[in-house]
Length: 88
Image: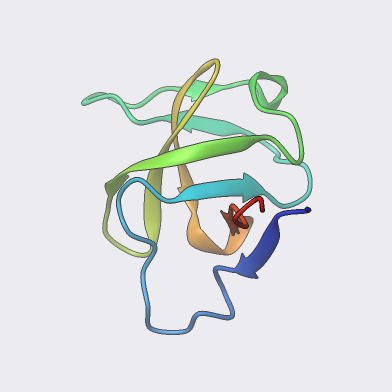
C-alpha cells in the first residue's frame, strides 16, 4: 500500500507533533542548520521529496527536521506530513 499524505498547510492551526514524518515539497533555495548558532548550507544536502523527522518546534511555524545529512530549520509550508498506512 502507498503512504497517505496530509499537507501541513492544510492542517490549519494544528502544528506537526514531534516525531512526525514529513516530506520536503519541491526544491529548496537554501538550508539553515538547527544548531544553537545556525549556518546557511547548500540546498543539495536535502533532495526534493526526501523524508525526515520533526525533532523540534520553533517560532513562526519553523520546524527542526532531521534528515540523513543533518538537522535543518524549515518552514511548515515547505513540508507535507507522511503517515504510514497499515500493511495488511
